[in-house]
Every structure is written in structure tokens, then in C-alpha cells.
Length: 387
Image (cartoon, rainbow, N blue to C red; front, top):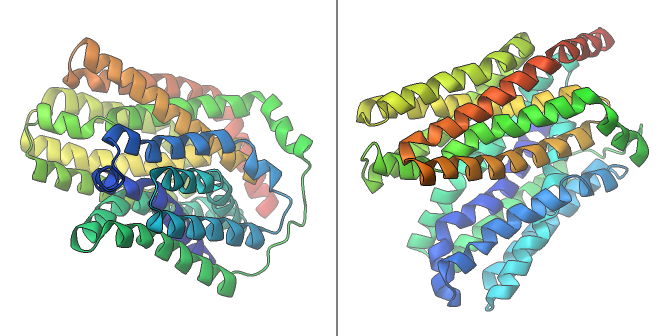
């Protein structure tokens, strides 16, 4: 029940973040702003997440975890209700950015609580279930909200965000037990992990790993249109397939990281490089690209779990702060990866976008291998404590 509630809560927050993408044109039209201005609802949300990621989870780590979960969900719910009925775009913008600061608080907390609720050996499976909420929020939020807006109104579509937040809030209040922090770690103790070389190796590995995934994915729709020559309808289906495959990848990752974690992490960049090579040589073939998109989506789902696992494994004694670092590293990787892959598109051609991803994955593979020995020792230490 606890894992399900955490997954629902994460979905409600990621849905708020990503779902608005599907209704940006309606928002622009409704409030009389251009589409780039409406896009601030997405970009400023992401910026707020990046800014608060390393700070707020740390500052709130001493408080009862149930209280923090209730507070964050309540902030999201109230702000979404206000934005749905707001008549001024600036009000909508403010009520989007404010809850965004609490996004990493809840998500990092969800991963930490999921990890602490099971045996150490079962942590990857528990985290993978919560990660399904992330994938579902990213994949299902856009089409669901867009569909609601098309059959009802913009206000009803935006109220959907508040509805999901509200459901998560209610079940949290009723079913989640009080979770006071029993062994509180001082801010200095948590920040001290930044002195550890292995932590930085993991952070850099995740920055480049996520950059290698999302740097290319950011231009997938454009690639499918210009290289594969898919129609708009087929592109929508392909993106949905990619997203649903992400969820499958999350499920698979839980098993893989439980049984042979370090070997899977080390092999992952090489597997995705192979996918990108196939994409470069066969991306203009409709059927081949459909299969590649499916396999890529599964690997991307596994990769999301690897990112979280690799950083938290490097600092298992400070799970809240480690999960916050995971969110910062992945967001930074996405930004840098998209920029670098964009240079390949502008400088050469859209079909060469995969080379940016391959470079990022190669660098990630290097840093993963450098830190692999220490990570194996961390796994042994965790399992020995369990025994």
C-alpha cells in the first residue's frame, strides 16, 4: 500500500510538470500570449526543480516524512486549483513555479521511503515501482490532459492536475503511518558526502548517462518526421510506444538491479550505443525504426532506474540528500545533452543527433568503470548489514 501511494504521489507531481505540454497552445490562446511565453510554464518549472534540488530536501530532512508528503501534495493541489481558475497568465505562472520548488522534496523522499520500507536486497525493486509513477507521469500526462481539454475545457483539464494531487493527498493522510526521522543526520554530515570521490564519479556518470538518453530523445519527434518520414499520427503513436516501453523497462530494471547490479550498469551504455548505431544506419526504414523505438524505450526505462540506483548506492547513509543529487544530476544531464545534440543537428544533419548521445554514453561508461569497484564494496556492505 505504501509503495502504491508513493507511486501515485510521484505520478501526480510529474503529471503536473509534464501534462501542461499537451495544452500549451490552448493556454497561449486563452491568455493571449505567444507560444514561447506559454512555454515558460515548462522551462521555469524545470529551473525551479534544478534550483531547489540540492537545498530544500536537505533543509526539510529532519521533519516527519508523512507531514512533508502531506504539505507538498497540499501545495500542489491548492496551486493547481488556483491556476485553473486564474484569469491572468502571471498568476498561472506563479502558481506553477511555486510548487515546482517542492517537486524534488517529494520525489527524493518517495525514493528514500520506498528504499527504507523493504529489505536492503529488495531496494531496487521497490524503487522501480515508484519509478513507474515517473514514467507514467511523463508518458500518460500529456495525452490524458490534452484529451480532457479537447472534450471539455482548459479549466477542466487543469483541474485534472489538482484532482490527482488531491487523491494522492487523501490516501496519504488516511493510509500512510507517521514517519518521524529517528536517526536524523545533521546538515554537515549529509553535505560531507560531497567530499567523497566516489560520489562525484557517480554524479558525473549519471549526468552523462541521462544526457545520452534525453539529449537524443529531445529530438525524437523531429527525427521521426525528417528521417523516418512518419506522419504526425504515426509519430504520436511512436512516442506513446516509447513511453509505455519506459514503464516496461522500469519493471525489468527492478529485477536486473537486484540480481546483478554493477554488471548491468556497466553494460547499459554499451547496449544503448548499439541502439543508436542501428538508428543511424536504419533510421530511415519505417519498420526498423519502430522496433528501435520500442527497444530504446525499454532501455531508457532501465536507465532511469540506473541513474537513481548509482548515485544513492554511492551514498547509502544519506538517502534523502542522495536522491536530491540524483534529481539535480539528471536534470543537468538533460539540459547539457539536448544542447550538445542540438549542435550536431545544426552543424551537420538531424540523422547525426545520435553521435551526441554516443559521446555522452562513452564518457558515462568511463566514469561508471572508474567507480565500479567502490560500488561493489558498497553493495557488499549493505547486504552484510542486512544479514
